[in-house]
Length: 456
Image (cartoon, rainbow, N blue to C red; front, side, top):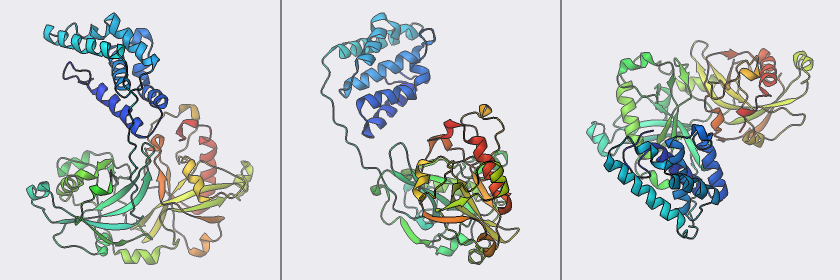
Protein backbone atom coordinates (compact mmCIF):
# COMPACT_ATOMS: atom_id res chain seq x y z
CA UNK A 1 0.00 0.00 0.00
CA UNK A 2 1.42 3.37 -0.99
CA UNK A 3 1.52 5.86 1.89
CA UNK A 4 2.64 9.49 1.62
CA UNK A 5 1.54 11.11 4.88
CA UNK A 6 -0.03 10.74 8.29
CA UNK A 7 -3.52 11.78 7.26
CA UNK A 8 -6.40 9.32 7.27
CA UNK A 9 -6.60 9.42 3.48
CA UNK A 10 -2.87 9.62 2.77
CA UNK A 11 -2.62 6.12 1.32
CA UNK A 12 -3.82 4.23 -1.76
CA UNK A 13 -6.24 1.96 0.09
CA UNK A 14 -8.05 4.85 1.76
CA UNK A 15 -8.56 6.70 -1.51
CA UNK A 16 -9.71 3.56 -3.31
CA UNK A 17 -12.20 2.73 -0.58
CA UNK A 18 -13.48 6.31 -0.53
CA UNK A 19 -13.96 6.15 -4.30
CA UNK A 20 -15.94 2.93 -4.01
CA UNK A 21 -18.10 4.28 -1.18
CA UNK A 22 -18.90 7.55 -2.99
CA UNK A 23 -19.68 5.76 -6.26
CA UNK A 24 -22.17 3.50 -4.49
CA UNK A 25 -23.79 6.50 -2.77
CA UNK A 26 -24.18 8.30 -6.09
CA UNK A 27 -25.82 5.23 -7.57
CA UNK A 28 -28.71 5.82 -5.19
CA UNK A 29 -28.19 2.73 -3.04
CA UNK A 30 -29.37 2.62 0.58
CA UNK A 31 -26.87 3.13 3.40
CA UNK A 32 -27.12 -0.57 4.25
CA UNK A 33 -26.39 -1.56 0.64
CA UNK A 34 -23.48 0.88 0.39
CA UNK A 35 -21.90 -0.49 3.56
CA UNK A 36 -22.37 -4.12 2.56
CA UNK A 37 -21.07 -3.66 -0.98
CA UNK A 38 -18.07 -1.63 0.18
CA UNK A 39 -17.06 -4.31 2.68
CA UNK A 40 -17.58 -7.01 0.04
CA UNK A 41 -15.35 -5.08 -2.36
CA UNK A 42 -12.53 -5.13 0.22
CA UNK A 43 -13.49 -8.45 1.80
CA UNK A 44 -9.98 -9.92 1.78
CA UNK A 45 -8.73 -6.92 3.75
CA UNK A 46 -11.69 -6.16 6.03
CA UNK A 47 -13.16 -9.58 6.78
CA UNK A 48 -9.99 -11.51 7.58
CA UNK A 49 -9.37 -13.53 10.74
CA UNK A 50 -8.11 -11.66 13.82
CA UNK A 51 -4.64 -13.15 13.51
CA UNK A 52 -4.44 -11.98 9.89
CA UNK A 53 -5.34 -8.36 10.61
CA UNK A 54 -2.74 -5.81 9.56
CA UNK A 55 -2.48 -2.06 9.14
CA UNK A 56 -4.55 -2.22 5.94
CA UNK A 57 -7.41 -3.92 7.78
CA UNK A 58 -7.39 -1.22 10.45
CA UNK A 59 -7.10 1.63 7.96
CA UNK A 60 -10.03 0.30 5.92
CA UNK A 61 -12.39 0.18 8.91
CA UNK A 62 -11.29 3.62 10.14
CA UNK A 63 -11.84 5.19 6.72
CA UNK A 64 -15.26 3.56 6.37
CA UNK A 65 -16.26 4.82 9.81
CA UNK A 66 -15.13 8.35 8.97
CA UNK A 67 -17.07 8.35 5.69
CA UNK A 68 -20.24 6.98 7.24
CA UNK A 69 -20.14 9.53 10.07
CA UNK A 70 -19.50 12.40 7.64
CA UNK A 71 -22.54 11.51 5.53
CA UNK A 72 -24.78 10.66 8.50
CA UNK A 73 -24.81 6.93 7.87
CA UNK A 74 -22.59 5.44 10.60
CA UNK A 75 -23.78 1.98 11.62
CA UNK A 76 -23.24 0.49 15.06
CA UNK A 77 -21.21 -2.32 13.55
CA UNK A 78 -18.70 -0.03 11.82
CA UNK A 79 -18.58 2.35 14.78
CA UNK A 80 -17.82 -0.45 17.25
CA UNK A 81 -15.14 -1.93 14.99
CA UNK A 82 -13.38 1.40 14.48
CA UNK A 83 -13.55 2.42 18.15
CA UNK A 84 -12.16 -0.99 19.08
CA UNK A 85 -9.01 -0.21 17.12
CA UNK A 86 -8.79 3.40 18.30
CA UNK A 87 -9.24 2.70 22.00
CA UNK A 88 -6.76 -0.18 22.11
CA UNK A 89 -4.09 1.69 20.18
CA UNK A 90 -3.98 -0.84 17.33
CA UNK A 91 -4.20 1.93 14.81
CA UNK A 92 -0.77 3.18 15.86
CA UNK A 93 1.17 -0.09 15.85
CA UNK A 94 2.25 0.31 12.23
CA UNK A 95 3.68 3.76 13.03
CA UNK A 96 5.97 2.74 15.88
CA UNK A 97 8.95 2.39 13.54
CA UNK A 98 8.40 5.84 12.00
CA UNK A 99 9.90 9.09 13.22
CA UNK A 100 8.62 10.51 16.47
CA UNK A 101 7.16 13.48 14.59
CA UNK A 102 5.13 11.28 12.23
CA UNK A 103 4.02 9.08 15.12
CA UNK A 104 2.70 12.09 17.04
CA UNK A 105 0.92 13.45 13.95
CA UNK A 106 -0.76 10.10 13.30
CA UNK A 107 -1.69 9.82 16.97
CA UNK A 108 -3.40 13.20 16.75
CA UNK A 109 -5.29 12.17 13.57
CA UNK A 110 -6.62 9.03 15.23
CA UNK A 111 -7.58 10.86 18.43
CA UNK A 112 -9.55 13.39 16.40
CA UNK A 113 -11.32 10.53 14.64
CA UNK A 114 -12.15 8.88 17.99
CA UNK A 115 -13.65 12.10 19.29
CA UNK A 116 -15.63 12.52 16.09
CA UNK A 117 -17.11 9.02 16.25
CA UNK A 118 -18.16 9.58 19.87
CA UNK A 119 -19.80 12.92 19.09
CA UNK A 120 -23.37 13.39 17.75
CA UNK A 121 -23.50 12.36 14.10
CA UNK A 122 -24.79 14.95 11.59
CA UNK A 123 -28.11 14.36 9.84
CA UNK A 124 -28.03 12.03 6.86
CA UNK A 125 -26.87 14.07 3.88
CA UNK A 126 -28.79 13.85 0.66
CA UNK A 127 -26.64 12.68 -2.23
CA UNK A 128 -27.51 13.94 -5.67
CA UNK A 129 -27.86 10.96 -7.97
CA UNK A 130 -26.66 12.13 -11.40
CA UNK A 131 -28.62 11.02 -14.42
CA UNK A 132 -26.50 8.42 -16.19
CA UNK A 133 -25.10 9.48 -19.53
CA UNK A 134 -26.68 7.70 -22.50
CA UNK A 135 -24.71 7.87 -25.72
CA UNK A 136 -26.98 8.78 -28.62
CA UNK A 137 -24.64 7.52 -31.31
CA UNK A 138 -25.74 4.52 -33.40
CA UNK A 139 -23.83 1.39 -34.31
CA UNK A 140 -21.85 2.11 -37.44
CA UNK A 141 -21.79 5.91 -37.01
CA UNK A 142 -18.56 7.43 -38.31
CA UNK A 143 -17.15 10.71 -36.95
CA UNK A 144 -14.18 12.92 -37.68
CA UNK A 145 -12.60 14.50 -34.61
CA UNK A 146 -10.72 17.80 -35.03
CA UNK A 147 -7.88 18.57 -32.62
CA UNK A 148 -8.11 21.95 -30.92
CA UNK A 149 -6.22 21.52 -27.65
CA UNK A 150 -2.91 23.00 -26.54
CA UNK A 151 -1.54 19.45 -26.59
CA UNK A 152 -2.29 19.11 -30.32
CA UNK A 153 -0.57 22.45 -30.94
CA UNK A 154 2.48 21.25 -28.99
CA UNK A 155 2.60 18.09 -31.12
CA UNK A 156 2.19 20.02 -34.37
CA UNK A 157 -1.20 18.56 -35.32
CA UNK A 158 -3.57 21.38 -34.31
CA UNK A 159 -6.76 21.45 -36.45
CA UNK A 160 -5.94 18.05 -37.92
CA UNK A 161 -8.64 15.37 -38.14
CA UNK A 162 -8.83 11.72 -37.12
CA UNK A 163 -11.71 9.33 -37.76
CA UNK A 164 -13.47 6.75 -35.60
CA UNK A 165 -16.44 4.43 -36.00
CA UNK A 166 -18.92 3.22 -33.33
CA UNK A 167 -18.87 -0.58 -33.09
CA UNK A 168 -20.60 -1.17 -29.76
CA UNK A 169 -22.80 0.53 -27.17
CA UNK A 170 -22.34 -0.81 -23.67
CA UNK A 171 -24.60 -0.27 -20.66
CA UNK A 172 -22.37 -0.09 -17.61
CA UNK A 173 -23.42 -2.13 -14.60
CA UNK A 174 -21.75 0.33 -12.25
CA UNK A 175 -23.65 3.53 -13.10
CA UNK A 176 -26.20 2.40 -15.72
CA UNK A 177 -24.74 4.75 -18.32
CA UNK A 178 -24.52 3.82 -22.01
CA UNK A 179 -20.99 4.26 -23.32
CA UNK A 180 -19.59 3.84 -26.84
CA UNK A 181 -16.89 1.48 -27.99
CA UNK A 182 -15.13 2.74 -31.11
CA UNK A 183 -12.46 1.78 -33.56
CA UNK A 184 -10.08 4.53 -34.66
CA UNK A 185 -8.47 4.61 -38.08
CA UNK A 186 -4.76 4.99 -38.72
CA UNK A 187 -5.24 8.24 -40.61
CA UNK A 188 -4.68 11.92 -39.88
CA UNK A 189 -5.29 14.83 -42.24
CA UNK A 190 -5.70 18.58 -42.50
CA UNK A 191 -8.94 18.40 -44.51
CA UNK A 192 -12.29 17.02 -43.37
CA UNK A 193 -12.48 13.54 -44.96
CA UNK A 194 -15.41 11.69 -46.47
CA UNK A 195 -16.94 8.44 -45.26
CA UNK A 196 -14.85 6.46 -47.74
CA UNK A 197 -11.75 7.02 -45.61
CA UNK A 198 -12.73 4.02 -43.47
CA UNK A 199 -12.55 1.77 -46.54
CA UNK A 200 -8.99 2.80 -47.30
CA UNK A 201 -7.26 2.89 -43.93
CA UNK A 202 -6.41 0.21 -41.40
CA UNK A 203 -7.22 0.39 -37.72
CA UNK A 204 -5.17 2.27 -35.13
CA UNK A 205 -4.34 0.09 -32.12
CA UNK A 206 -5.51 1.31 -28.73
CA UNK A 207 -2.60 -0.55 -27.16
CA UNK A 208 0.10 1.89 -26.11
CA UNK A 209 3.77 1.48 -27.02
CA UNK A 210 6.68 3.85 -26.36
CA UNK A 211 8.43 3.29 -29.69
CA UNK A 212 7.53 1.54 -32.99
CA UNK A 213 9.67 -1.53 -32.29
CA UNK A 214 7.77 -2.06 -29.04
CA UNK A 215 4.88 -3.77 -30.78
CA UNK A 216 7.07 -6.80 -31.53
CA UNK A 217 7.08 -7.65 -27.82
CA UNK A 218 3.28 -7.55 -27.50
CA UNK A 219 1.38 -10.81 -27.12
CA UNK A 220 -1.76 -9.18 -28.46
CA UNK A 221 -2.83 -5.84 -29.91
CA UNK A 222 -6.15 -4.22 -28.99
CA UNK A 223 -8.12 -2.19 -31.52
CA UNK A 224 -11.14 -1.32 -29.41
CA UNK A 225 -11.42 1.98 -27.58
CA UNK A 226 -13.90 1.96 -24.69
CA UNK A 227 -14.78 5.64 -24.34
CA UNK A 228 -16.00 7.01 -20.99
CA UNK A 229 -18.18 10.11 -21.49
CA UNK A 230 -19.64 11.66 -18.33
CA UNK A 231 -22.08 14.09 -19.98
CA UNK A 232 -23.06 15.72 -23.27
CA UNK A 233 -21.21 18.85 -22.15
CA UNK A 234 -17.92 16.98 -22.52
CA UNK A 235 -18.35 16.78 -26.27
CA UNK A 236 -17.08 20.16 -27.43
CA UNK A 237 -19.06 21.88 -30.15
CA UNK A 238 -17.15 22.23 -33.36
CA UNK A 239 -14.77 19.36 -32.65
CA UNK A 240 -16.88 16.42 -33.84
CA UNK A 241 -18.17 15.98 -37.41
CA UNK A 242 -20.61 13.29 -38.47
CA UNK A 243 -19.49 11.60 -41.69
CA UNK A 244 -22.23 9.00 -42.10
CA UNK A 245 -23.13 5.48 -41.04
CA UNK A 246 -21.69 2.16 -42.17
CA UNK A 247 -23.93 -0.41 -40.42
CA UNK A 248 -23.92 -3.27 -42.90
CA UNK A 249 -20.22 -4.04 -42.83
CA UNK A 250 -17.33 -3.79 -40.47
CA UNK A 251 -14.14 -2.90 -42.27
CA UNK A 252 -11.85 -4.84 -39.98
CA UNK A 253 -9.11 -6.80 -41.68
CA UNK A 254 -7.77 -9.99 -40.16
CA UNK A 255 -5.04 -7.98 -38.51
CA UNK A 256 -2.37 -9.93 -36.71
CA UNK A 257 -3.06 -10.73 -33.06
CA UNK A 258 -6.42 -8.98 -33.18
CA UNK A 259 -8.27 -8.73 -29.87
CA UNK A 260 -11.18 -6.63 -28.71
CA UNK A 261 -9.86 -6.02 -25.22
CA UNK A 262 -9.29 -2.29 -25.52
CA UNK A 263 -8.85 -0.26 -22.35
CA UNK A 264 -11.02 2.54 -20.95
CA UNK A 265 -10.31 6.03 -22.26
CA UNK A 266 -11.73 9.18 -20.66
CA UNK A 267 -13.26 11.43 -23.32
CA UNK A 268 -11.79 14.56 -21.74
CA UNK A 269 -8.31 13.26 -22.61
CA UNK A 270 -9.28 11.74 -25.96
CA UNK A 271 -7.13 14.11 -28.02
CA UNK A 272 -4.01 13.10 -26.16
CA UNK A 273 -4.85 9.40 -26.49
CA UNK A 274 -5.53 9.67 -30.24
CA UNK A 275 -2.44 11.78 -30.94
CA UNK A 276 -0.04 9.69 -28.86
CA UNK A 277 -1.22 6.40 -30.36
CA UNK A 278 -1.13 7.75 -33.92
CA UNK A 279 2.35 9.29 -33.69
CA UNK A 280 3.94 6.07 -32.48
CA UNK A 281 1.93 3.55 -34.53
CA UNK A 282 2.18 5.43 -37.84
CA UNK A 283 5.75 4.15 -38.10
CA UNK A 284 4.59 0.52 -37.92
CA UNK A 285 4.00 -0.50 -41.51
CA UNK A 286 3.08 -4.18 -41.30
CA UNK A 287 -0.52 -3.68 -40.16
CA UNK A 288 -2.42 -4.59 -43.36
CA UNK A 289 -4.59 -1.97 -44.99
CA UNK A 290 -8.12 -2.41 -46.26
CA UNK A 291 -9.24 -3.14 -49.78
CA UNK A 292 -12.08 -1.20 -51.36
CA UNK A 293 -14.95 -1.25 -48.87
CA UNK A 294 -17.58 -0.92 -51.59
CA UNK A 295 -16.62 -4.37 -52.83
CA UNK A 296 -17.27 -5.73 -49.36
CA UNK A 297 -20.93 -4.79 -49.66
CA UNK A 298 -21.39 -7.08 -52.66
CA UNK A 299 -19.79 -10.00 -50.82
CA UNK A 300 -21.91 -9.82 -47.66
CA UNK A 301 -24.08 -12.82 -48.54
CA UNK A 302 -25.58 -12.87 -45.06
CA UNK A 303 -26.96 -9.32 -45.17
CA UNK A 304 -26.77 -9.35 -41.37
CA UNK A 305 -26.11 -6.14 -39.46
CA UNK A 306 -24.36 -5.38 -36.18
CA UNK A 307 -26.61 -6.16 -33.24
CA UNK A 308 -28.88 -8.62 -35.10
CA UNK A 309 -30.18 -11.32 -32.74
CA UNK A 310 -31.16 -14.79 -33.97
CA UNK A 311 -32.61 -17.92 -32.43
CA UNK A 312 -31.14 -21.18 -33.69
CA UNK A 313 -33.16 -24.39 -33.34
CA UNK A 314 -31.21 -27.63 -32.86
CA UNK A 315 -32.30 -30.30 -35.35
CA UNK A 316 -29.42 -32.71 -35.92
CA UNK A 317 -28.90 -36.30 -34.85
CA UNK A 318 -26.12 -35.06 -32.57
CA UNK A 319 -28.44 -32.74 -30.64
CA UNK A 320 -30.96 -35.60 -30.40
CA UNK A 321 -28.25 -37.87 -29.00
CA UNK A 322 -27.42 -35.21 -26.38
CA UNK A 323 -31.07 -34.67 -25.44
CA UNK A 324 -31.29 -31.16 -26.89
CA UNK A 325 -33.34 -31.75 -30.05
CA UNK A 326 -35.66 -28.83 -30.96
CA UNK A 327 -34.17 -26.61 -28.25
CA UNK A 328 -33.53 -22.95 -29.05
CA UNK A 329 -30.30 -21.06 -28.40
CA UNK A 330 -29.54 -17.38 -29.00
CA UNK A 331 -26.72 -15.56 -30.73
CA UNK A 332 -25.98 -11.94 -31.62
CA UNK A 333 -23.90 -10.49 -34.46
CA UNK A 334 -21.05 -8.39 -33.05
CA UNK A 335 -18.79 -7.95 -36.07
CA UNK A 336 -18.46 -8.62 -39.81
CA UNK A 337 -14.89 -9.41 -40.77
CA UNK A 338 -13.31 -8.97 -44.16
CA UNK A 339 -11.40 -12.13 -45.10
CA UNK A 340 -8.78 -10.91 -47.53
CA UNK A 341 -7.65 -14.36 -48.65
CA UNK A 342 -11.15 -15.58 -49.56
CA UNK A 343 -12.41 -12.12 -50.56
CA UNK A 344 -15.56 -12.49 -48.50
CA UNK A 345 -17.19 -11.31 -45.29
CA UNK A 346 -17.44 -13.57 -42.25
CA UNK A 347 -19.82 -12.73 -39.39
CA UNK A 348 -18.63 -12.90 -35.78
CA UNK A 349 -21.29 -13.95 -33.27
CA UNK A 350 -21.65 -14.20 -29.51
CA UNK A 351 -23.71 -17.13 -28.26
CA UNK A 352 -25.71 -16.85 -25.03
CA UNK A 353 -25.76 -19.35 -22.19
CA UNK A 354 -29.49 -19.97 -22.53
CA UNK A 355 -31.48 -22.92 -23.82
CA UNK A 356 -35.25 -23.11 -24.11
CA UNK A 357 -38.22 -24.96 -25.58
CA UNK A 358 -40.05 -21.80 -26.60
CA UNK A 359 -38.97 -19.09 -29.01
CA UNK A 360 -37.63 -16.18 -26.88
CA UNK A 361 -37.52 -12.44 -27.56
CA UNK A 362 -34.33 -10.57 -28.39
CA UNK A 363 -34.48 -8.97 -24.92
CA UNK A 364 -33.50 -12.32 -23.40
CA UNK A 365 -29.85 -11.48 -24.10
CA UNK A 366 -30.03 -8.59 -21.60
CA UNK A 367 -30.28 -11.00 -18.70
CA UNK A 368 -28.23 -13.90 -20.01
CA UNK A 369 -24.45 -14.40 -19.78
CA UNK A 370 -22.31 -15.32 -22.75
CA UNK A 371 -21.37 -18.89 -23.55
CA UNK A 372 -17.59 -19.40 -23.79
CA UNK A 373 -16.42 -21.03 -27.00
CA UNK A 374 -13.46 -22.75 -25.39
CA UNK A 375 -13.65 -26.48 -24.58
CA UNK A 376 -13.93 -27.30 -20.87
CA UNK A 377 -13.32 -30.92 -19.97
CA UNK A 378 -13.68 -30.41 -16.21
CA UNK A 379 -15.75 -27.46 -14.82
CA UNK A 380 -13.90 -27.71 -11.50
CA UNK A 381 -10.65 -26.75 -13.24
CA UNK A 382 -11.98 -23.45 -14.55
CA UNK A 383 -10.14 -20.56 -12.94
CA UNK A 384 -12.10 -17.33 -12.54
CA UNK A 385 -10.78 -14.40 -14.60
CA UNK A 386 -8.80 -16.62 -16.96
CA UNK A 387 -8.77 -15.48 -20.57
CA UNK A 388 -11.83 -16.77 -22.40
CA UNK A 389 -13.02 -16.61 -25.98
CA UNK A 390 -16.73 -15.85 -26.36
CA UNK A 391 -16.81 -15.37 -30.12
CA UNK A 392 -17.34 -17.55 -33.18
CA UNK A 393 -16.27 -16.51 -36.67
CA UNK A 394 -18.64 -18.20 -39.12
CA UNK A 395 -17.41 -19.24 -42.51
CA UNK A 396 -19.28 -17.52 -45.31
CA UNK A 397 -21.72 -19.38 -47.58
CA UNK A 398 -24.31 -18.74 -50.25
CA UNK A 399 -27.64 -17.15 -49.36
CA UNK A 400 -29.50 -20.31 -50.40
CA UNK A 401 -27.41 -22.40 -48.02
CA UNK A 402 -28.17 -20.04 -45.14
CA UNK A 403 -31.90 -20.64 -45.62
CA UNK A 404 -31.42 -24.36 -44.92
CA UNK A 405 -30.59 -23.69 -41.28
CA UNK A 406 -33.16 -23.13 -38.54
CA UNK A 407 -32.51 -19.43 -38.01
CA UNK A 408 -35.21 -17.08 -36.75
CA UNK A 409 -34.56 -13.34 -36.72
CA UNK A 410 -35.62 -11.80 -33.37
CA UNK A 411 -34.62 -8.17 -33.81
CA UNK A 412 -31.67 -5.91 -33.15
CA UNK A 413 -30.12 -5.10 -29.77
CA UNK A 414 -27.64 -2.25 -30.10
CA UNK A 415 -26.90 -1.76 -26.41
CA UNK A 416 -25.33 -4.60 -24.48
CA UNK A 417 -24.74 -5.09 -20.77
CA UNK A 418 -21.16 -4.86 -19.62
CA UNK A 419 -20.63 -8.01 -17.57
CA UNK A 420 -17.61 -7.56 -15.31
CA UNK A 421 -17.14 -11.33 -15.06
CA UNK A 422 -16.79 -11.56 -18.83
CA UNK A 423 -14.25 -8.91 -19.70
CA UNK A 424 -11.74 -11.28 -21.26
CA UNK A 425 -13.29 -11.49 -24.69
CA UNK A 426 -11.14 -12.09 -27.73
CA UNK A 427 -11.75 -12.72 -31.39
CA UNK A 428 -9.76 -15.75 -32.44
CA UNK A 429 -8.73 -16.52 -36.01
CA UNK A 430 -10.56 -19.87 -36.07
CA UNK A 431 -13.37 -20.22 -38.61
CA UNK A 432 -16.38 -22.45 -37.86
CA UNK A 433 -18.14 -24.10 -40.76
CA UNK A 434 -21.94 -23.96 -40.65
CA UNK A 435 -22.28 -27.72 -40.89
CA UNK A 436 -20.38 -28.10 -37.60
CA UNK A 437 -21.75 -25.12 -35.66
CA UNK A 438 -24.56 -27.06 -33.96
CA UNK A 439 -22.21 -29.74 -32.64
CA UNK A 440 -19.83 -27.09 -31.31
CA UNK A 441 -22.54 -25.08 -29.54
CA UNK A 442 -24.12 -28.21 -28.04
CA UNK A 443 -20.75 -29.33 -26.66
CA UNK A 444 -19.89 -25.89 -25.27
CA UNK A 445 -23.31 -25.51 -23.62
CA UNK A 446 -23.12 -28.89 -21.88
CA UNK A 447 -19.56 -28.21 -20.73
CA UNK A 448 -20.17 -24.72 -19.32
CA UNK A 449 -23.75 -24.87 -18.02
CA UNK A 450 -22.59 -25.86 -14.52
CA UNK A 451 -20.01 -23.08 -14.16
CA UNK A 452 -22.16 -20.61 -12.26
CA UNK A 453 -19.63 -17.84 -11.65
CA UNK A 454 -19.46 -16.66 -15.25
CA UNK A 455 -23.04 -15.41 -14.88
CA UNK A 456 -24.01 -11.80 -14.16
